[in-house]
Each structure stands twice: as C-alpha cells, then as structure tokens.
Length: 174
Image (cartoon, rainbow, N blue to C red):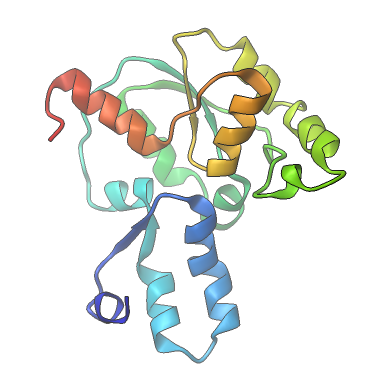
C-alpha cells in the first residue's frame, strides 16, 4: 500500500482495532518510517471518513443501542459516529459499558471465558436483552458483535450495515 499511502489516498478501516493499531501503535513500532506516519494520518473509521466529507445519509427512523469498541473510544472517540447516527435520524443510545468482555481472542482463551462473560454482563449484554426486538444493535468491533451474539442471541450490526439498511429503505443502494 506504499503508493496509495504516499499519494495521500484516505484509507477507511471497518474494524476499530485495526484503525487504532495504524493510528496509535504503528508509529511506536516504526517511529522513523515516514510511510507509517502518513498512514496514521490518513486512516479513518467509516464514520470519521463520512463525517469529514460531509456525506448526507438517508434517514432511518429506528431506535438503536450502540456499543463503542473499547479501543475506538479510548484512542479515537465516538464523536464522528454520533454525528453520523444523528444524520441517519436514529433514536440512539450509546451505552456507558466499557469493554464487551471478549476483547479479540481473550474470551476464547482457556480459563478466561467466565471473566469475559462477567464483563459483558455488567452493562452490554443486559442492555441488549432489554432492547425491543425492532431496536437495532450497533457494534463496529467484530469481537463485540460475536460477544453480543453469543451472550444474547441477537445479531449486532456494523455501522456500514446500518447505512446499507437506510440506503435499501430509500431505494438508492447501488
């Protein structure tokens, strides 16, 4: 990806842990690599890219419960996400829940399953179970969506899927 990076082409990452690795960790690993520094400046989450480019999504009049991936909240903030959610017209609630508990492979490791589930049960999993069946559950992190599915039987959606739903509803999805 050296040439697109040097050309300044924005790179959109859909997995918050990958975006945070490029933004936060890559520069520490390669502090003298100009391409690593460029990449850190030009990698965006989907919401950051859309918000920075003033994209106007179609309206989606639905309720949503939103879980922010822990690295996303810690390193990048959820500001762009909340703006996109507002622009979509969603009636959304951002959970004050910290980590989902799965944290990549943590919850799959021997002896850590119970800890993983206990973390999920502090706020996230009960909130998802309490949400009405027609309420959208949003979680951009892959491991977060897995934890939600395992702990509640509900399928959480990525922001890209919610946008696709809005485009389908409007009839403008390519």
